[in-house]
Length: 119
Image: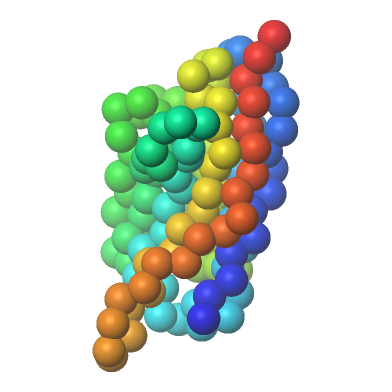
């Protein structure tokens, strides 16, 4: 079992910045991948940024050049720095951890943190 707790969401003006953090606890040694996803009302949950066990990050075009992802493995914390925020970045942001065991692979999700970009 892995537990994920997100923090750092809130209201920010367009062009502003936010830092999101995700703290993992439990069976963290089995985590091979972590990432941030977001979901707006009526839309599917989509990838914001992810990092694998080798430290390779993946940030889709929507966040390229604006978002930075870092993982503190020792502290089991995933950080997402978001700059130049746009109203279309408004969503609930979820932290995900991918876990592999000897029998199966699992996804764990946090409860989500709201990010609102508005004047």
